[in-house]
Length: 270
Length: 257
Image (cartoon, rainbow over all chains, first blue to last red):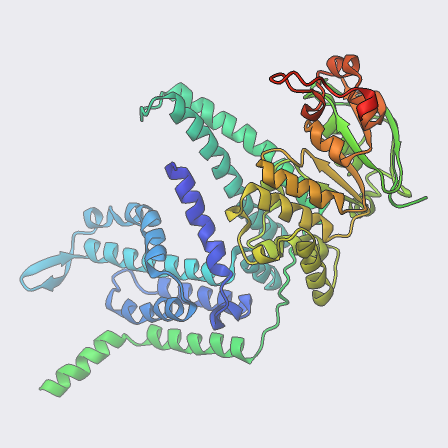
């Protein structure tokens, strides 16, 4: 099985996870979406040198992964796979910002390194939050929640189709890559012309396939509106979920809990 | 007029690149008939099927499904009458679980939750796929995918079943199971296929297409014995009518069939 095929099945595994039946899976998608958005807003709202204040925020993914029965290793692998983006964003900070603002023992740490680390932690928290949302809710239900929360329908439908067609693209790419590798005798090198040709064919084949899928959807009554079997009914459990986490995020945001705990411990040992 | 009737009158269709898809196709398929559409690649079979569900609209001529003329204004009604099973089941299955996929059509018809679930379960029971209901479609075998694709269409209670190469990429056992399943349906069935043995098993009538025209329309057994017609349409007798080249048993004659 080639890498594309492996990654394909790997992405689709999120759908399998979303079909679980835990308390968190049964929560209203809107509750989980709002909570995730609040979590992300809280995490990104800190100043660029913050590190210790992020520690309590790890409670959110840990609790959700535990109660939702999600595979932590799989999610971590997904976060690591997209981490080069975060590295790319922050890698120049140590070069641009060389002012020493902290010390570990006698070693001075520049603001650039601290802000780089801060970016990586934010990235870890926000991406894991988003992945957990998809794994507990399913992409279609997230789109439905977005729609019910007033996000323009055109945007939501685009998202829905993007998610559907990304599999089409990967599927076609997988077949073409297999055909190429079977005739290139395990050679990993791909000449530029072959590469360009594959991209062009991939685009055309994806168009055709996407058209057939759209036709299949239209034949079964799809009219651009997203419908799910599950009715969206928010109850007290959903309300409690949102309010509980919101209060916690607010507390974590307004108080640097690790620093405060450290102060209390230091006070006790004085 | 019955809801189960499909009538084409002098259909013409030319693709934007100038390829002639249909060139004056006419036929009448009545209530409860099982009809095979056969012909070489590019003969116009899929083009014709796409006219039945209104994906393509004829440049000349008329297509009528039940009481409705297929036109942009009647598409919703026509698509409720015609259930189309696509050649590649992967094109048809896109929801996270089998059950949600089967329920997709009824959901779009606006059915209430209980009714919708009942319909989906009934359709899954009909094709023997209840045990797959919580599985993601992409993890199924080709035979299972085909069964689920048929269930996804049956859940919409169509009057007419239209299938494009339903036996392609199925192993012999899955193919046999599919034929047995299709035999139990009382819908009007229109099956575009290259599998002439399956056509012989399922369809009492066959329409032969060649270069966008109907070159023959009649009883399946009679058509499959017309070697000249089959040769002209780039087809050949079904294997079960070819006799045995090894032991020398001759092909069955008209009197044998």
